[in-house]
Image 1 (cartoon, rainbow, N blue to C red):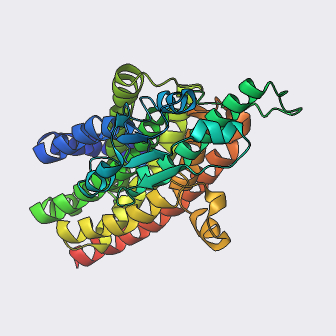
Image 2: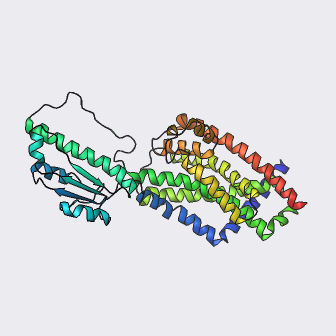
Image 3: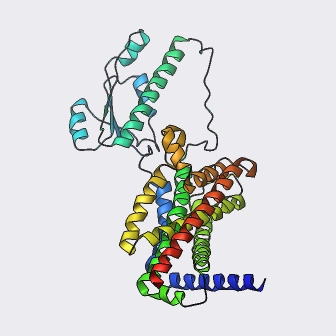
Length: 379
């Protein structure tokens, strides 16, 4: 028992030393503040793939009730209020990049529609604005078709179709991109900061020569590694807690459906794996620039293939199998389930078990590599 208390005391004191070292590193403090405030706010409010305030113009050569109805169907926030231009202004406006979409309503549109003919409405798209062009063209076609269908049904007195499709949006009724963007960015930043902080802490000691001081002290590699894990993990947990309440819930007013206690339990398990990964990567790198390159190589697939950007079901099966070994995959699953869908432990327990197993394996591998690195320094 006394020996256990001695180990715990060493781990606590070494962890406090890590916290003081971080406090004296202003660039790391700036990175933490930026990551959990500006980055999350930007991801929630300025996602480039969303259809938001799309610039649009309309050429109305019919000037009828139907064309006026189509004109009024495009409104903020998906579109800017449409600007009425002439046919001669279409090409110059698109060449200058003033509009993403230009809708050309031909003459006699209403007369041809009521007569049962099939007139053509032209939609010009600036495809250089790829995200807006893809989403905007599809939505514009739906709007025009819907307005024409309702107009014909009302003027001809036809009956409504026997089957009506009613769409109900679950978990995000307004399809607000702020909800998804901010929470997924928070999940991503937890991973990135935990890897960077623990890896940078080890490399900082190596560059400053303090790791040699630890080698002559009565401490074990396990105590050194556990101290870095709990200290840097604590920093990320506190930053996540403040960011979730201050930025996500407070500033962006994103509703959270599930238990925050359950979510933070998953955060702790995830940090156990990612902080160990950070130490493992730091033992492979000789200096901070090499560690930065390793972080880039590791973080890109972890962020892109974990299910936060694209559903895992849309990926090849071999990618799904490989990414099932990554902690970010299971952390993203439990984060989406708890924060978006209000899932409880009965639903997310497989993700918790997977994170625990991955964390244990990653910690064991990192500890082995860390001991080898320390032995080489001592030799």
